[in-house]
Length: 283
Image (tube, rainbow, N blue to C red; front, side, top):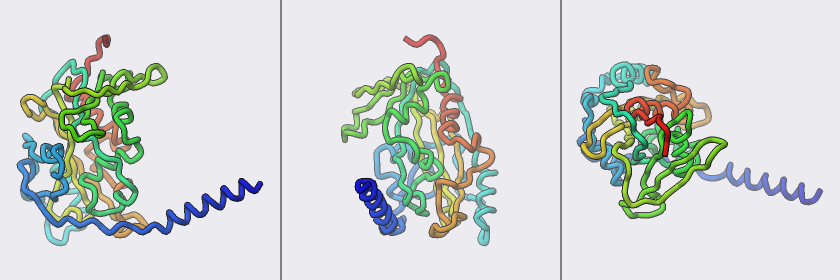
């Protein structure tokens, strides 16, 4: 009985300590950088890594216009609806068949709850929130794409986060639910011809109105040709007990970007529509 009481007291102490943990200071954007892939400068932290700089250098066949349609006095809901109607959507420019796998160039980090309650901290909250409930590992990310019969790629490659070597990668392959576990290999050369990356999308007055844009991009590693883009906007600002009502985890997404209820499934479909997986017998 004593052990149970002591254990409960320990849990109460930890819970109380967590409840008393100070909230991090609100994030602020202080420096902005001009990039080729966007009509206006983006926060410097968005291009602080090689993968981030590359993502923001990509020029799309249908870039967003410099004029976003914002008008003084617009409400958050009005601006959000306008951006969704005029800019959001799924755009497939080219398809490639019999693709065994691809390079997941910029795996999003797992955001904390504080990140999700901060207006400016996350680059693309509508994308990054998808990874809060996933373990931050190549196995968990790989299962989004390598999991027959639902996802039929043979492998997914990504940068090796355990090393600073820019030419070190990991390859996830072989997973099948209740049949075989995921195999993770460290490799020094990519097998992939095609890649998936993402980036935040900066529009005038967006975060001030609790709106954040994002783009998933599928492209050819060899030619840099863009094959597909999925552009979406998220809107928050209506959550109780959160400063400014900000909580990106339950943000609204554009109605014309579907499916809205399963975020990993949504960008998995984008990849599968442009990089058609090889459904033949795997060796």
